[in-house]
Image (cartoon, rainbow, N blue to C red; front, side):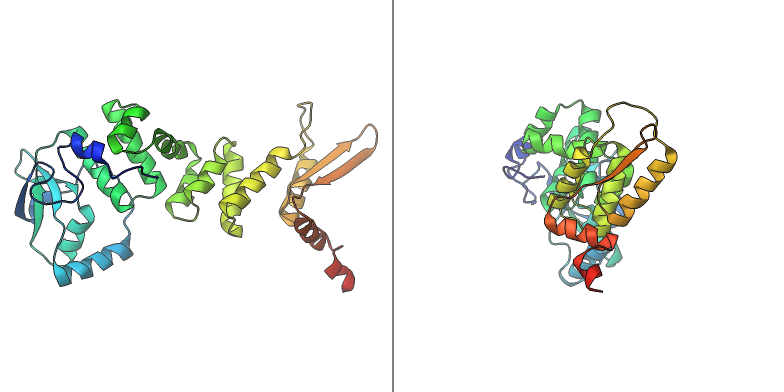
Length: 292
């Protein structure tokens, strides 16, 4: 999500002068707390653990300690709920530390959710799907509009809309984005397509390594593929043959057959002459095939 500024509106909203943590910021007090006094935050937006990054952070903490304090709020049972710094907490535990510096401050649920989300946004720690889910949770739990979210987080309203829009993708496509096999840009291209088409194009994009621009071109070809003007059931054998040709040629294919007239045709779509040459090669009638 692109950011217009370094979140000053949110900083003012939670009583901070910026996002650099020290004892004077976030309206809290810097303390040394035992790690077992800390508990994971309810509003932690990250759902997948980056084991490689956690290992690097652990090594850094072993060498230098926890340089940047965590942020937490006190709970009624005497423990402290982490608002920012979950990865540093986990890495410190793995490094064998007993204590860590923590900025302790009072915070209601809305503030806690905002701090947790903003810290991850600032660090670019969230994948696009996690980011969308975190924004959706803020919106639903606190009744915020997209305009209010944009103002709260210091980003454009269109960025909020695009992040939330990815959540309307088929779950299989969302999983590919979460796994970094596709980018958010690929997901945006697939929005609005039937779910079956989303999954098929997404899997093809992963297998072939398509760029966002190439996926856009493939979607345009799909949209431009001829369609029957009359919505009548198609011959299942014709549909199966069409699918086999489409997979073999990796190109849009449409079979048309008029049994009454005894007439049929095959339509194959392509965008460039190079793509046409590739189709001819796969049909066995290209220049390479002829030379053999």
